[in-house]
Length: 242
Image (cartoon, rainbow, N blue to C red; front, side, top):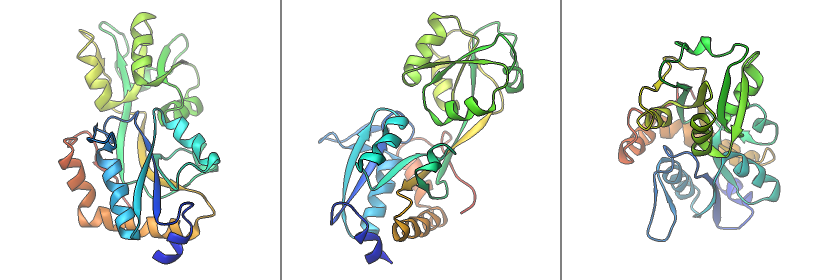
């Protein structure tokens, strides 16, 4: 199986890995040569070692740009959140970690729970094409989404335009709240970003190899070890199932 999976790589002997730099929980820094460091790069390196090939990182500032790059054959695997729209062109593994998503609201906001947000007149800042943006685009019935470039851009829009809520991953929202006196993260979640490994649907041997790898990485404790190693304990959770 490993030999067949290696034969599906576009560059013989190298696993090209698409990494989303916009997720600061999965990519927590850079090495001396500028290579990404964190749970996602380490997990990809472990898969490359399993396959017996070198690893090469292709980095993207936003998840949507990573997803788009598959059509240009820029990566063999991409570490990105599972989302139905993306799944139309990307074959995803089971999730390896998950991150809860909720809303940040300003001081004195009348919004008290996640369920309160979807009502007429509520304006929500969101990072364009993040998994939770794609989810809210499908799920919201009444509230209005205002999109910006990345979470920093969404936070700036939230503040400068006096919007009603900022959608995002809970750990990042908690950090944003520190910069906005009185702001609070609403309890609960509207979704959970399921982070997985994707590849081309035609890479059937690689898909099977990734499935075995993810199952073993969760069962062996490798993913939990990487979470602890990179200091994101309590912010990332090992995904259930698989």
